[in-house]
Length: 468
Image 1 (spheres, rainbow, N blue to C red):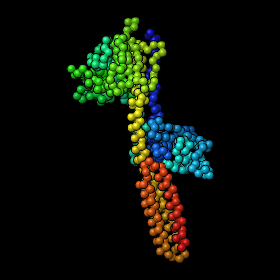
Image 2: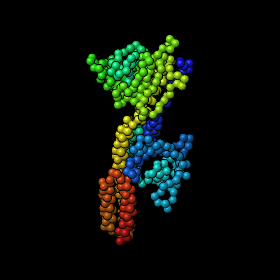
Image 3: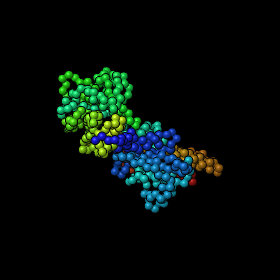
């Protein structure tokens, strides 16, 4: 039955796509942004990476915090919380007797205290302690290249370029050898002009989906199209040259057999059996039958997919899957093709290796960031200790000169201070070098505690020397 009404598929949504994967590029990739990056490990040893941007609430002078929580699992958690949320946020303090940290009451330009970071992280990120994380400055984030690596990591699942096969089936054909051996027909040419635009391959600088654009080995022409910032190119079996005597049509099958989604153009009522094609990659077939109804050429569409592929849109028209409007057919097929590829990536055949690859990249990134942030923190601690050591030494020397001149005491104090600073650096470096990879978070906690104890002990020792 031919439908009277048409449907606009030009803005059809893409299913199974992480629509917020651009968050980091969009919100964290600006020069004036205040970005804080935290690296660490769960108690289980699994890596965790948290990006937080401090920004101003729209129409307000109050702060809000944009958070991306990444783990080895592919699904990142993203959220925005306001200062007001921290007023009633529960906390998981390691010391139950300690009071809950107050929410930030400072103007946006003021520094954010550790107690605030602790509240933000421990109330929004499950099963992590703030003390198991190290923080990297924005300067270090940019200079180390991790900033750009995070953009690529977050957008791994996004695609803007697609390749799809187009296979012709003639009446009476049931084997893939026959399908791949077909020659071009006028009916197929008319259909290709609906779903794409013909381009000459030689010298073509656009997306050609791996077809040869120099020597002509892949043929003279192909078809391409664009849809909502997505670029499509087709592997048309009849346009790819075939070699005489090659019954398996290796050249044609090499391209189409490695596609994930394929359009099967059927001339007549010949049924299509997807199991007749031997391919590890082809997971979705969009079958288009050219038919004649009431002296009018129409196209009947069917969808066949591997069992592990989840459902995807846009759905076929309820009343009839017969298209007589060429523009509607083009929009529907392109939207269906793009959706089909995203859905196929959710099947175990693709999801398992893709997640495994991401997990390895993520683990290496956290290990790199953790080490750099730890070194950065170690340097800051050493500079802080050196600064206070000199201040204490100068103050003690001035006090001695005001009473009884004793340059030897000030010299002794400076030497002791410098020795203690050197000892702190050696001990901190040793802590860093001895950190087991699987328990990196604990090493950081020990380093922090060790630094604080060392600093307090140093000033106490200096005071004792001055008294003597």
